[in-house]
Image (cartoon, rainbow, N blue to C red; front, side, top):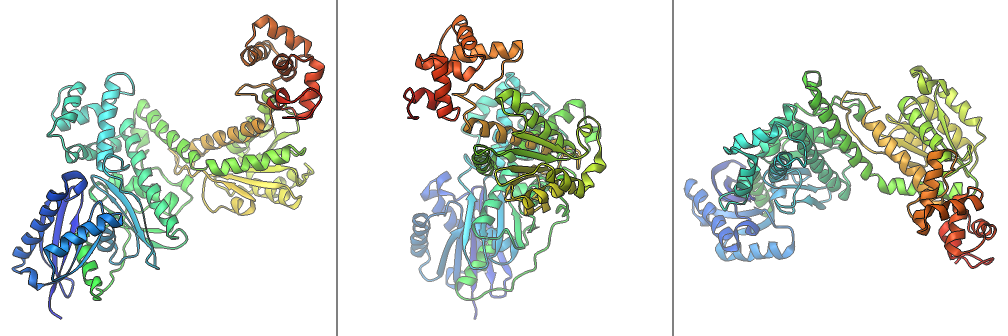
Length: 623
């Protein structure tokens, strides 16, 4: 069969067309400006597509009558109305050929991977993650437009401008990124960025052109630039992860194409993105594009008429990260850390701390579910037991020890169990964490039951002491929660419930007292505090179950009563004294006008909840 196919890739930056023969060879190529109608308008967009097709036919010494099929793979084609508008226009323009209209990301996937299977991340001026599974189901994330996309060239460039202005005005750090941006634009002062940014000649592309300068500054150790790069890389990885989850690719190997100028031309940015991807999608097989999206569009055009070209093998890029535990990998952003200044060292540590906080954010639903499980059991007389080794153990012991003075809990309600015992809290005993039998025996000695909850805290998720303790907890019928910083760990496989903030590689490889410890501390704070709130130990946002055992806490107790009841300090002190130093009794007494004895009865009836006791009828039931 004789004839040719045309593939058109129309993005936010350029429009490119190829002519491909029956054997899959590209015969000619042409290029023009953007044809995204959301950027340039419908009339301009259609005119540019027609012009680039005319040009590529002329270069191939062909006419439209030589063409059998064509695919327009265009940015902004996400919904049926957009697709149909382009299809109607193209049918009028070229009525004799078989036409296909697709999103440009699908063409990038096909050109990059050689078949319509896998995921592509396109990061140029804008960004999109797009995927197709073996059953042909499609999914996308991002691609909202350059003003909204994260991880794109425009996003990095705009963030850099904002950072320079904020630094210059003292609202943020002022780093060498300022001079990098000014030099790139030929400007003398940060203030000159404002008219430059708003000038009619400053286009989307000119702002996106700052992205390579931001990436190079990050590679050189600038902490502000590193923060921008890290945020962008994490956004791209999150988008790809969402696509993989939507179409069920997380449990199988699949090609993941890294497309667009940011990923193909900036190796450092690609490495940071790859590390983030490896954290969330360890089964992905990253690859640089074998061919561009215009070629992919032509491939789709041939497929549209039943002529499928041979698939090409997928090869991984040389800078693909190694397959180790994520917390043990060397961090790309902290490379050459020993050559950095003190400011750069603490700056990159702060960037990574922020990433740890972001990792915790993504686990909030799992944390909330754990709080509900803990609350229901503690309300029935159960206990909360933290078990860990090293930093993780110390954090658990610390959180447990702060519950009695903060929330007036019995000493055995929240317990910390640590490998090596109490001495290991101050003097490291790293060997103790390897003793699974010791963990098992220590947990068995607690006489756990079904109302108890054990939280196994381990960054790696494979600490033998913690595993032993969790096995004992399961044997005794306790509810078990794994708090880990890696996916699919031995500890999480033992647990009834898992909280896994994937913090990624540490600033110093394997030093999990850093990001992993930060994330664990934040989550332990949430588990104990939210549980105590749910148990009624907080009224409004006030610590009403505090034990006023020293001057500071006595003053705090008076302030709580003053704040909640809107009374002066003398009234608060008198109410506290009449209530035997019990803040809750004093509150209910003042808020309802009842005696301390009746206030105590109301609280007993309402399980210690101040709000319910205030609403309850005297001597009756809670409202």
